[in-house]
Image 1 (spheres, rainbow, N blue to C red):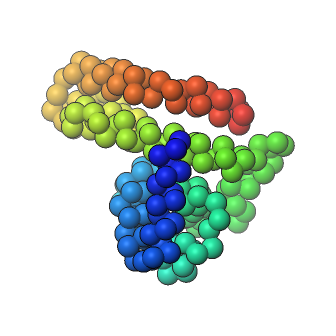
Image 2: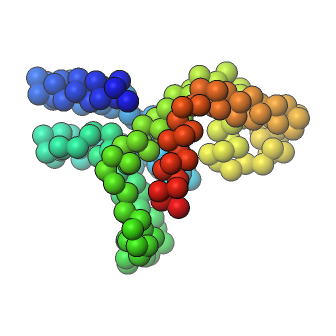
Image 3: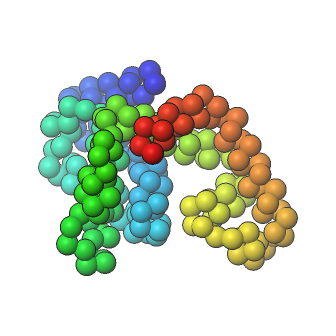
Amino acid sequence: MSTVYDSELFLRKTFEQDPRKGFELLFRQYYTPLCSHAVRFVYSRQLAEDLVSEVFYQFYRSEAYQKIHSSYISYLFTAVRNEAYTHLRKEFGKTDSIESSTENNLPGNQPQPDAEVHFNNLFLAVNESISQLPAQCRRVFLLSRFENKKYDEIAAELQISPRTVEVHISRALKHLRQTLREEWTLLLLLFNLFA
């Protein structure tokens, strides 16, 4: 948690000295995790990248970095979620906000800012852990968990056996359990708060 806080302070100081440099650092650090976050909502990597790019563009154009008093992480994850909801609302012709129809109707289900920051930090830690996997293992895991493909589909796409797919998934999950041992407690706490 302290490294995230230090990173946030460093970003703030960089923005104060040189906004262009601060934006570049922010973009490099969070673009990939934000795309992974967005793809959970829109189920298209290309569309997720477009949405995240738009969020960054608006962030810089409107000079939002001067107005944010919470964390940049929290702001960006929320902005990407909202951009995804806006896209889905346009695509499916909804007139009311998806966010308001799903969250605001549940009493006591409003996430607290610090819980959202913790969740976003956990999300970043998961992405970091996934990036440490060997290339083929990572690809299999992402196809399974983020593109919801079945083992047979993955095996056919990558020209490997379904058993090999199963082994890769097992290794990836074991790696995630080992590298994220401390975060699991936090994850369980957050799920209990919002369940």
